[in-house]
Image (cartoon, rainbow, N blue to C red; front, side):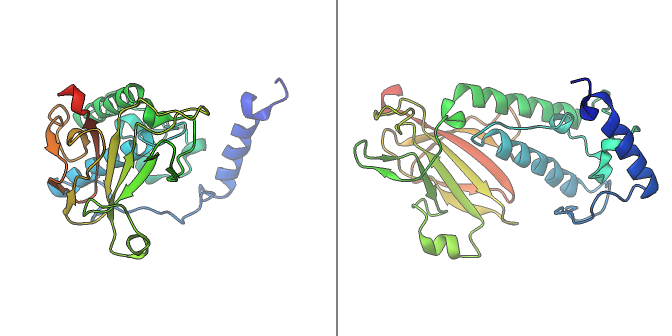
Amino acid sequence: MAGSPGLWGGHDRLDSFQSHVEDNRDGHSHNRSWNSGVEGPTDDAAINALRERQKRNLLATLLLSQGTPLILAGDELGRTQRGNNNAYAQDNEISWLDWNIAPAGQALIRFVQKLTALRQEYPILRRSRFLTGEYNADLDVKDVTWINANGNEMQEADWADANTHCFGMLMDGRAQVTGIRQRGQDATLLLVLNSHHDLVHFVLPACPGGDQWSRLIDTNVELGSETETFRTGDRYDVTARSVLLFVLIPDQAR
């Protein structure tokens, strides 16, 4: 432990030296990013609304994914590092956390709290078994089914269609949870992702065990007003560039 430069600052000094001799150009410039229409801060309300939704989209994609989510301190309040992709050796406002959190940052924190609460409430979001999409004939179920905007299971033609920008991920709570071949008792969830630049009409799919979906998350809907119930077969207008999460209401729960 005592000899570890990563723990005791040796790497910090090396990175600081490297940044100095390379004039802070030691980070690569091959960035997969998009400025939403204008570079840097703007007063354009539409662009700012889109940027806030994109923050929620990225956090939802991460925290509703299987596996262990890794979040950098400040992501939960929208820290940007002013676009710097190599702020490790920057001991200044670029890398510092500003604890004077603006209203937008406070709202994002509440959204992250909602996501972490959902992750805790629904074990199907953090399964210990890999999802396969394979049909289990004994249990008559697939652990995950990919759904197109028409509410049907995705086919090869859908995956090959370059115009497919919106689809759903149906996680069936009846799927086998452990190595024991028995039906699961988890909730069934539907995650819908729309990367299209325009609204998409998405048909909520039919699913065994219920005929109503309750909306838990819509990154275009104000936090606190998400809960609303829809029937299978209903057409939901999915906002451009947004993420949604629904839970199936079991028949016996009504």
